[in-house]
Length: 494
Image 1: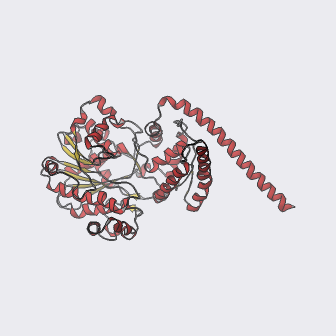
Image 2: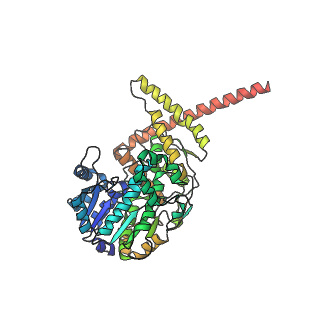
Image 3: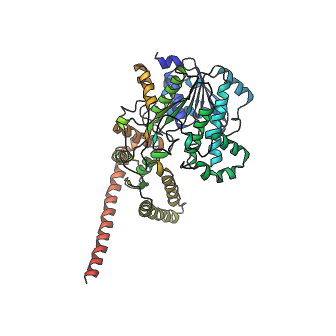
């Protein structure tokens, strides 16, 4: 048994955000690799499902397949608790609150709304106020050994060199004042104040995450606290299966759109560094941060911060991301693709809008006309509206290169034993990006495209057919353009 496994043996943990992308991988990793005694997970009723129904449905999630094959009763170590991080008191009953105070030893707070366009009053409640409420609850826990808050590497994206420290100087006013305003003013008024309150922050997500960090900095007191700042979390590399993903956020949405042949032009700086990290590496890093926070507990001084992004020795640009995706999409083509996959990139907003008109909107209108003639509901223009909105929202994050200091993260890695290195691998220095994307594209096909491996042959036939049509279309357009230019030259010459 390794040092980290020994640490987690018989421990009782409270996890928020357990139903999310990273949260599920953390739970799976803990159950499969350690003998953790209990994981309390805060859940809220959703879409008419009570928390027990939501929890039971997890057993059908592919992320838990490997675990349940070897440990059929593993989920019995997970206990869902009714809560709501948007509620002023976290929505906890008195008995559940008392249970957590008496039993919990480790807290990993990962609950968040990651929508960049979330109204400010909602983002404040979930991302900032909930962090304060969890911290206050942790201070009452009689057996607490570590409290780790999951932030984001872009919580301080207003500066281009981000060190493992706090940046309160970039906030227009303190987190305490902003939370007071949110409690005393109605939601509509708070939302209208967003541009003034946010200052240089590009969206409510990064802003409220920055506020949450200040809450931790000012209110942690003498409890052992750490802050984990992962980059853009993408599909798994190795565990529990390669390429697993269950959402269409960020760069994975780009891969998916290109694979379908729907996304053909986007705003992207091909020379900018991509701060992407696999979800399984992020889960291992989060668990290592909890362990390190507990064993290196410092009652005095500020909480330690751990930036987690690609290693300086193994960086990847957004251009690399695009090229690897384009090359590998031919290995795992979707049988439901709508056109030959390709992607052009620009950093110029007007050029994007101009080219998108020909690459996206004209074909979209044509498809919608055909759908109407068939008596079906048109959908392409509405889809492209959403795609273009998301592209514009993400533009600042794929147009800039941030430099991240990872001194604390490297020190943590060096502190771990060789056995823990193999069990809880998050070493971004050794990741093979070509191998990673090969698995990621396969995963996108299976888990997002819902296609079976047996349809790859059909997908390749469709890809070849669309490639021929694509070349014919290119030749036709080029020939037409050349004919127009030749006609104009003849008129001018005459």
